[in-house]
Length: 216
Image (cartoon, rainbow, N blue to C red):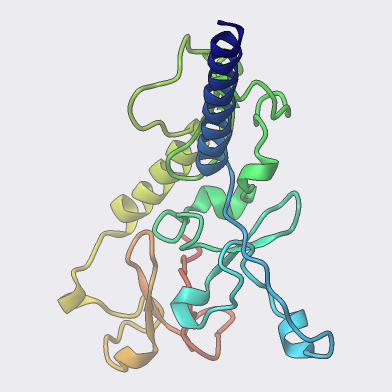
């Protein structure tokens, strides 16, 4: 009988340990980035000087090499790897971006009490639900967007209202009014205003590899 009790207790402890391990693994998968260890030669100056994505461990080329850097820890990430590539907004440009390890409430500056911390679905800005103005009682079930993002989005919408919008067939450079030389024509990722790279003030030498936003 004693052996059966001990076996049952051991089984129960094992199940509890397994459950705790599963819970821990679940929290890691949900809240942490998967990191890649990179082994390189200490004399490889090119690699040492380049920003390396902490998640995939690579540099990347062209659009796939677009990086975003955490304003707190200065670690670099591919926008693709942190789900920001299609969501880079004026809010991120103006206020900066924080990785999950450095996420804090923008209201009180504290990153604790994670169960009450909500993340904007567009710009990754975080707030405790009780630090919002006005505060809310519980975590929203659907998408949530911060007031900072909505304000910036509204301003960008005003650009389209004030300056108008052109379809691709009618796109012209806002600087010179000419729609030719399309290979040197860049389109704003937010309001679709276009400029030749040499009509910008100041001009630039080549088409940007990542997202580009006009001054409007």
